[in-house]
Each structure stands twice: as C-alpha cells, then as structure tokens.
Image 1 (cartoon, rainbow, N blue to C red):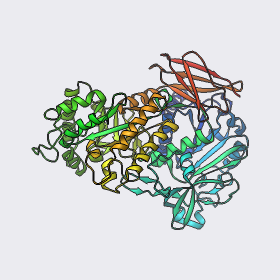
Image 2 (image 1 turned 120 degrees about the horizontal axis):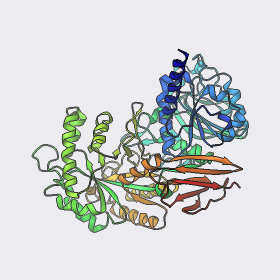
Image 3 (image 1 turned 120 degrees about the vertical axis):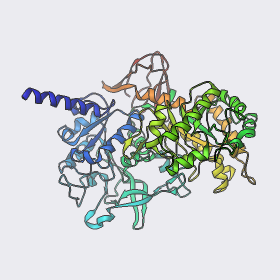
Amino acid sequence: MRRTVMIVLVVIGCLLVAWHGLRTVDRTDRVADRTDLRVLLAYAPSMLDEYGYVLDAWRSVMEEEGVAVEVLDMYTLQDADPSAVAVSAPALILPDGVCRSLFSSFGPWVESYLQAGGSILAVHDAGVRSQKGAYLPRSWLAGVTGVLAVDYNDLGDASFTTAAIRFEDAAAAELCGIPPGKLDETLHLTGYGYGRLEYPVTGSRVIDSYGLNVLAWAETPAGDLPAVTVRRHGEGLAGYVSLPLGHLKAHADDLPLRSLLRWWLFDELGLPHLLNVENGVGAVVFNWHIDSNSEWTVIDSMLRDGLVREGLPTSVHVCAGADLNEPGDAMGFDAGGRGRGYLERLAPLAEIGSHGGWSHNLFAREVASGRWGESEVRDALRRNIECLSGVVSRPIVEYSAPAGVHPPQLMTGILEDFGFTSYYFTGDGGSAPNRSFADGAMLSTELIAFPVMPLRDVASFGEMESGPGLAAAEVADWLQGVSDFCEHQRTVRLVYSHPYNLYQYHGDLNYRPAFSAWLDDLERRRDAGLLSMTTMKDHAAFLQRMLNVEFRWVRDRGGLRVELHSEEGLAGISFALPAARYQPPSGEGLRTVTSDAWHVVVIEDETVDVVVDCRGR
C-alpha cells in the first residue's frame, strides 16, 4: 500500500512540474542554492483554485518575452534564505489574485529580501488579506511599497473600484512602454472603438511618499489614486500596480501586463532576456483588408504610386467572393473572376490572407447575430481559402475577421483546423503579437494573434478621416511614432487599413503622402538594420520558433554563462544583456550590437546549441 501511495505521489509531482511549462524550473531544487538567474512568480496555494488562470496569463507573457521564470508557492519560498534568493532570483512578482492572502511572516521575509538586493512587484490585491481570508487594516506589503492597496475598514466596497488611467507625464508613459496611439491628449489610456478606458483598480493610497515615484494615476470620483509606483527599499526596488494585470491579460487585454512587465524587468532591473524579434530588430506589420470590388481600380493606383513595394512585405487579406451584402449583389471582390488580375499583381509583393469567408458584410452580419454557427462558417471560409490559394498557388495561413467580428470560442478551432498560423485581432488593443486569452484561458498554442494598433479610438485611415477628421500631420506623426516605438522597444506592432481609404477622402484629409513618406522612412531604417517590415506569417513563425528555445542564464564567477538550445536551429535568435553589468560578448557565429543600455547578441550560425561566456564589469 505504501509503495502504491509513493508511486501516485511521484506521478502527481511530475504533473505539477509539467503544468508550470517549459520555462519553469523544477521546484525540487533548493530555491536559494541555484546558480541560474531567473524571476520568481509566487502564489499562495489557497488561492490557486480560484485564480490559477492568472498564473497561466503571467507565465505566457513571460515566456513570450524571453524571461526565465520559476513559479513558486509561498511555503517553499519562505523556507529559503531571502539573502541567497536575492542573488539568483533578483526579481519577485506577486501577481493579482493568487497572492491576495499571504502569511504574516511574509512581511519580514520580503524586508530581508529587499535589504539583500532583491526587488518585488506587488500587483493589485497582493497581500491585502490574511491567511484566513480577512482583510487586513494594513497589508503586509504596504511598509515596503509605500502604498496601502486596500483599506477595507475605511472604504468597504470602495476598496475596489474602476478608474481611468492617466500617466504622470509623457516620459512616464514612454518608460512604461505605452505605444503611440494608446494615449489621448491628457495621457489617459484609450482603446479602439471605446476612447478613454476604465480599468478595475484597488482603492489604493500613499502612506509613505519618501522616495516614491508615481508613474501613473487612477482617476476616481474620490480623487486620484496611485496606479503604478516604484521606490527604492533597502538595496532593491519595491513596485506596485493597482490594475489586475493577469486578469486583464486572461480576458483579452494583453497590453497592461506586457508593457509593465517589460518596464519592471528590463528598464528598472536590467535582467537578461531573449528577444522575440528576428535578429534582434523590431518590425512593423501592415495589414490591408480588401472587402469588395471598390478596390479594383485602387489596387493598380497603389502599385503605380509605390504604396506596396518590393522589399517591404505586407499582409493583404481578401474576401474573395463575388458578393458583398447578399447573394447575387455582385459587389464583392470576385477574386476568382473579375478581380483575379488585381490579386495576381499584388501576390508577388504580399502575403495573401483570408478576410473572413466569401461575402464580407454577409459573413460579419450572420456571425455577429449568431445565425451562422460552425458549419456555415466553415463552408464560407473553405470557399474563400480555396479560391485564394487557387489564384496565388500557395497556402493561406493569415486571417482577419470582417468588421472585427471574431467570437474566439467559435473561430479558434476552425482556424486551427484550416492550418492558419496568425490572425488580425481587435482584442489586446495596441499590444504585441501573442497567444491570446479569452475567458481565463489561452485560446491556442498554434495561433498568434496580431492586435491592431489604434490611434486612440480609430485604427484605419478611413476611420481617421470620416470620424474625428484627423489632420494629415497628426496621422504622419502617429505612423512615425509606431516606427520609433518598434525600433526602440525591439518589438512588433500591426497597423491596418483598406486600400480605398487612401484614395477616397474629403477635403484636405489626404493621408497618402504621409503613408508614402512613412514607407520611405521604413526603407531607410531597414537598410540601416534598425527596423524591418514583415508579414503576420513570418513573424508568427519566428515567435513560435523562439518559444521553443531552451535557455538558461547561469551565474559564473562574477559573469554570466548563456546556454541556448533548439532543435529547430538558433539562427536569427538573439538575447539582450545589460551593458552596465557585462562586457560585450564575442565569438564565432555571434554578432553583438550595443545600444540603449543593452548588448544585443544575435546568433548568425545554423546551430542547435550555443554557449556564451559573458564577463562581468
């Protein structure tokens, strides 16, 4: 009987380790004795059943950002020497939900960890309740963050509220990785189709302003509350974010978690990480949507005017049927008939994708109403794919939803079955390509979502012109800002529009010169190796390859040993090291570029294993 019990326990233990994913370290190792450098993502076991999905969301983003992460329960963490943990795990994240209830002894442990040089990021409701579930008059973490997240005795239900998020100034927004177009004129976060956004936040208040830097505020009827803060405590940093970052990510709002994670781990703490862009260079994706036969003459104009160019690959998605609104109206693009020649002229310069299924407005209307289910969607999408692939003679693997109608629970399995690898997405607004979540669960490991980059509450050139009537100079500044952001952040963003938007306009709201100048600038940046233009297909393939890389950062005699392995090959994979901490590494098959406080090391050889020794300064 004892033997059977032991076998069962071993199996359960193995399953728990597997649950933590490829990047998660085996928890049977002693936490403080490890030599590999990583970030700790902590949780209270009592909160796991209710908020386990939050850990999944955090871990997914950290994997996509090339961060070595260990998911660790509080029991194991508190048994370790905090001073030793600070050396090998200099960053501790206490996520929303899963850290709501903490032990009273955790406060002194955190104090010792910070004094030894570790840094913590407390999120939303971390530490606001006791182990027994009672709200505390003062959080265990308030003494180090300087912010009391929840004062339930005084505020009651107002301890949790909603608020607009306003950044302290433009420099704070830039530091926090907020892309252009996601802020209005007063530096509030905005969303495509929504304008200024309201987020769930805690009723936080500052209790110790000494050394406290508030980067963003939550605006409530009761006044401004600290939303993003950081202060030095001991030899480390203590940060606080009032938004439930993991919950937001798990419900199709990726940007707050990803941006603030990058700010904390990379800008504040300077931790080494893999880069999720090919050759360590950021990129822009431009996604054209072709809905109807109104694009026929426009396509030739685009080609003539150089708005689609060789060397600047773009993603062009087509609704291929002969009809637009109803069967027989003959208003569709008709890719297999009258529109075929236009598509054939575009195909050599672009990756052709599927824009919904067959009849643009009909598809969007019927899916949105629920009158079309899986069978009808599959039939329409199959017709679209077969028509397009028959014209361009290659697989169709990119997708965009007509009018943004994309119920994820319906569409995800269908797109996977048809072999798609990537899709345009109106969720996760303004963020990087990612494995999106909905209703608390990752939708797919095979599909990469490409969130659209808005300019406040609009995204296409047509919306900018017909809605707020934005001046051409503002649109030009926004396009330039997207390029600057992708270059400096070494990330990817998707911009979208329709071809006719650049040719059908009113008055002086002509954005075509601005777009052409933007392409000219992209060519200059590409030639200088600063930025690239890519397709959804190509970036999705690279991101999947990067996610399969096994990596370790191993502390070694004051330096760092970088170990990388991938059976798919490491060419084009890159990693970043803080230049202030390490000397620039060199070696056969490596190229190192130092800029923006980082050594970016690019692997140029076709190899499956790389070991790089980086000497400390």
